[in-house]
Image 1 (cartoon, rainbow, N blue to C red):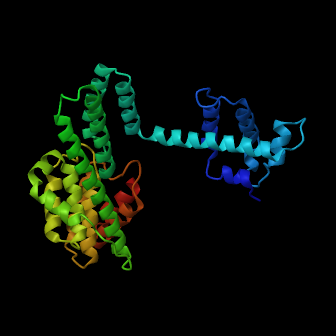
Image 2 (image 1 turned 180 degrees about the vertical axis):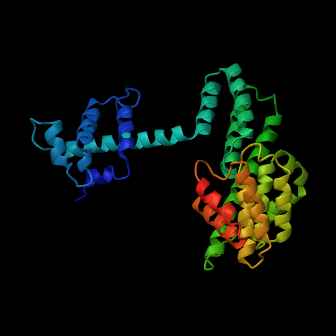
Image 3 (image 1 turned 45 degrees about the vertical axis):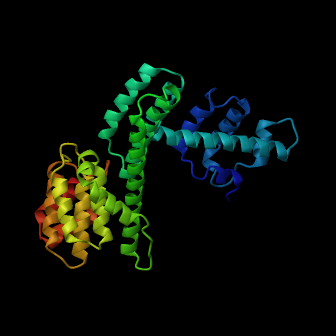
Amino acid sequence: MKNEISELLSNISQEEFERFGDFIRSPYFNKLPRLIKLYDYIKDNFAGIEKGSITREGISAFMYPKEAFKNESIRKLLSDFWKLLERFMAQEEFEKNEWDKNIYTLRGLRTRHYDDKFFQRLKEFKKEHKNSNQEIDEFYETNTKLISEEYEYWYFSKFDSNNEINQEKSDGLDYEFIAKKLFLFQYMLSREYVNIDLKYTYSFFQEINEYIEKNKKKITQDNSELYRNYLGTKFLYFKGDSKVLSEMKNFIDGQNYLKRKIAKPYWDYINACAYLINKGDVKYYTDAFEYLKILDLNNIIESGEEVIHYYLKTAVDIAIFLQEYNWLENFIKKY
């Protein structure tokens, strides 16, 4: 039977708990020996956590064997343990995000006035970020953070110099707002598509639409992924506009996604084809299949290290309809 101790660790795997051991033994993160002692006790009894075999009384007997049980002391001990566990979870999430680490590296260099190193790393990070594979909303959020570090340098160091960074930050904030709204709009529109009872309000879509169309040349040149994301959102917003899909195809074909081993734009197009197929326009089976073959030939079917289950189902449905059984058999064996 579960208790407060098992609830405390209910979502921590044994592997994570092992890493927590390294964390809790680091003097940088923990200076309380009693928390290490408590960790060792829990680790030795980890197998019994789900059954609720670790209790306040058991902890008290281990930690303070010559003292009577004091509920308040154990409560404080567990509270301190939980706070350290929270800090560990925060550190785990931080370690997963290389761009957050890069931003804080810049901040550390900037605030300690390592000016030459700061600008060297800023240049490196900006170049690397242009070719990163972050989702569009995260990409522009990171972009704004990179600009902001340079902005803060000039703001506090040389207020009368390098005024162009103000314009760069202003533009960066605009693009971040647009990217995040478009990303969210796509999700909302997809939810509406599968659930007819949902109805969202798309505030700022028309304003974004007008802004992008007005600045189309500049955006397609300098922010191509933002424009592609815009086309995907526009396609869904106008209930599967075939003209928008055609523009999406031409735009994708004009980019170097294959050389960069980026699959998502092609899958977005295939999914858009599936949207029209579900409306009865079966000619898009052929279009979708052409892109499937391109992805397969270039070995970029996977998203990350796996084939997303929805992508797999879409590929199977398309191949069966077109009676491409040999291709489908090889596809299933391969992936």
